Image (cartoon, rainbow, N blue to C red; front, side, top):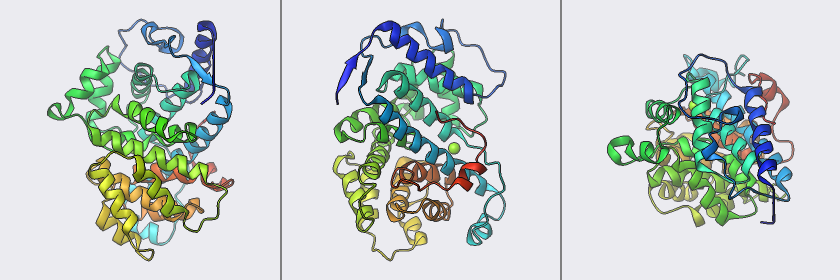
Length: 353
Ligand SMILES: [Mg+2]
């Protein structure tokens, strides 16, 4: 990656610009006050990454595709969330377009934070990201965060060190949940030219909240899937999905998540979504290994059709806002005009930059 060095003053200006994006989409709720001293937009002075503030020369192009992915991710998140209502199977079987507006959830909130950090820093600065996560949680804590996430983000917000808090979750094992995977597709888009860098940056983005290696493996896998979708968006669709799964498996760390993706890759072409869901899991345990394989299978199966990909994904039920967020963040990258305008209009207003 080619990069140029910028001055600290310019760096701060970028952070301020990124903060402006926060204000444009933030929620407005009363929340506990942070104890940290902060720069404008709430970034602690100690977190300004003046040692690593280099941005690639093609930063704007990288951000454009990251935001394309973020758009698809938030659409999937908001779409899937609509099917927690009564009788989702009937609605899905009828392909009943949910009544707008579709509110997004924590998946989108955290993906926005990742995109903001990439905008400001050109890489994942974990301290800055942790603070962004916590600030977004404090501004809108009712976006569907899990209990562990509530605890962790509140601790960070009042001054806790994410390293200690994340490592202490789940009796000291750290979280292996799907939260690292649900928010990471824009990062894969940003670093789409460099798969080895994706592994490093995706792991960094996950470990702020997910200390367990499996929670990080899911993030790596999804980011790689997003990168492959972008890199091959102009290629014929035949065989592209299978190639995506192979590409993901080449660099996803060994473990239950990778094993699940390998099972997904071995499913026959005529496997039904119901079969895939039963064999791979659909996020009912809210873990990486229970969520990422089915999501990647759905994305790989319908890379050329955003709507079909999302209807297929939501038919699995399970953790449907998150499976759909993962798929939306990948498939939005796979073709030039894959996201239907009707869907974008149905989502609650959201600025993705
Ligand atoms: Mg959610």
